[in-house]
Image (cartoon, rainbow, N blue to C red; front, side):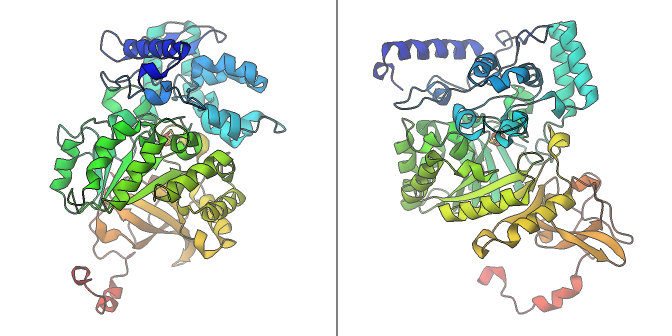
Length: 529
Ligand code: SF4
């Protein structure tokens, strides 16, 4: 945004903000210290955006947080803004201390659109029970009692070093990189600091400037991307090494641009990753560009009234029409209320009609936010009406505040089947509750009696070993199981993964149906299809 286009007060504000951004860029010496005071009444601030790797954001790359827009300007709400926000929404007043203290552990950031338009401030009872309140405002209840005590004691003692050390200990205990993301999914190439390649056909790319979102979900499984620890982050600026890698991997048909949220980037920044695909000869084996985003419902203005919304739509349309690629917006959508505003409906319409993209929806099922069959039923129906394809219901991952949000596997499955039952077939593209875990994506298909024992019926939707994809297997029924590593094999059977979660070779296991192979004969071999 050139400064000459700004009014003087706006320009001053931007200059001030840019100065603070520069001051906050990470270097060992300049790293901002944690400002924590002993009393619960005083300021407790960790600004997750402030602590970033050096040079990650240049002035214009930071535009989503500091942009001056014609109509509405995006301005993130951070922990330090809580007192002001409580003046606007007095029901927050008795929550501020809790939010600020828990925000020492969990990255906190809210979008003004979400706070003003999605939270129902007039609801009866505790505002803390509003699904969108729960979605963005952290609470100490998300920590175990032991961790709450540790943090409270450290804060009460008031020594910043001790508080910082305590925060690190607690964060480390919250499994910042689940499902082997660091150890198993990252290609072993020094230059590929922002690439994960877990499944043959799909590569995940974490653009450095996309490692933030318009707001942070309190249950985010990528929270480690936002806490400023360079060792924990996936992030990469340059596109060339990604393209070089893809050149060598012709099996890759899909790139998932993820984060954070790639839609936090200005169009000019996003172009370096997407524009090359306008050339049909550029990596022709890459057919599908997926963009994982929550901007659609955290800041729908990104697609309509942001200063570079038009160029974004044009870029998407050109990549599709000139480059011949499929662009899939993988939209994180938890609740039907997210689809209710005119701003969101305008954004959906524009993306589809002018951008030519396909929007698919996905979300985890989370206690207190959407663990209700009626919510999913209504959500899928409304999505289909608006032209969105229901895609995934996920299970809370084993990271962060999982203990606070988890829904047991059996309950999630029941909820799914109740929700899907009274929908039209167009909604039934939604996959049942699935765990995106170390071995792959495992769907909980149901509960049945197998050889006289109650059992979970499970299915691989994805797997590190593609031999397993589509295969059904069983595990002992356990009403408390919340994650794949709670599962036990049925007597005489084994689970399809080793202790570390890596798939066993897909050979003659009692839980497989090898005898069906004879029925496979008439199927056309893949290579001649
Ligand atoms: S939108 Fe996605 S990446 Fe961003 S905070 Fe929410 S869950 Fe995390």
